[in-house]
View 1 (tube, rainbow, N blue to C red):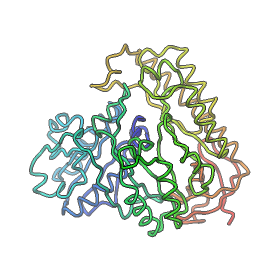
View 2: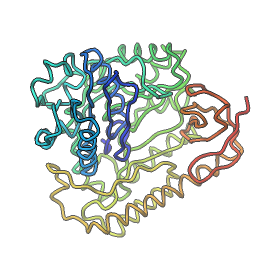
View 3: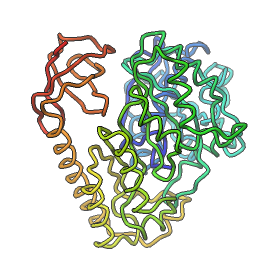
View 4: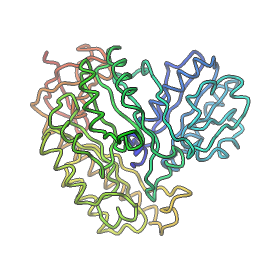
Length: 438
């Protein structure tokens, strides 16, 4: 499992405000893509439950900083909206309910297993201030249909939740429970609904996406699910995967990359480190050579695939030589997109008991990795100059190519949600500079 995604795709702790929530209700999202999807579920549930004048905080627990940001945002919201109901849910609420219940600003704490359930945000439901159940007891994944995603050109479909693995640094299984999969038929039906609404791209997301199917009859694979979606939803232009575990890629998925141009040539890998001893101490299920082999295997069948990765800087006991191995991995694999996390000890995890490195060393190594990531992105953009690409417009003047390259162009050239052809003429180190050619 990756850091947050492991959580579906890990992103550094971030706050996404949903301004399209029901009147008087704001949804504030922290963390991963899966959380962003589940915020849409919460928004729809809040509307169905008749909630008004409220702020729902969908929290992240991947780092201590993410929890701190949530607490800070709650206090700020109370000052701005003194009469609103402030409701906290998400992974941090599931793992640390007492932390949020102790805040005078908070009106209710709702666990991950309940945040999209009928009545979760009704007055009756909120009458009980803390409702956090045993997430480890949840064995099935009920499909939650989302008809549209506010202010997003692409749609996310949750195919899996939870994680059966126990990486030593990761607290997320405590917030998400064991792995459970959405039935393939439900996934296909939801993808077709979204495609019919005009979404040009759907992203399959979850906590540990590559484990999809292990708990279903016949143990189908993620590759089989992808093939089924592409066959039964021919109207969908683009299908993308969120963060996947570097230890798992099945032959069917590899075949899809080789044969299905509608499966986007972009993968974000939960690598975490490039040194075998550190990977072992993290209790990861892959080693350095396996990560290299996976990337090489995909590039062999789909040379235009771009790769991103989650990496942890300054894991306990990490030597200079071990860190250098991680830096070298970025170079060797030509990673284009990095999510770098300074190691953050999380209570209840084995890594929190390991000998820590000085915080100054951790921060310095994180900066080195980010610099390596910036160099990798610049080199990736160098290779794009002169290409004509198919790109999905995300916001006016900003689009994403199939390999996830971000490109700016004349905002008047196309509205969000449209797939257009762009010619890349240059870049600024972060984004391609392009013009519409069709």
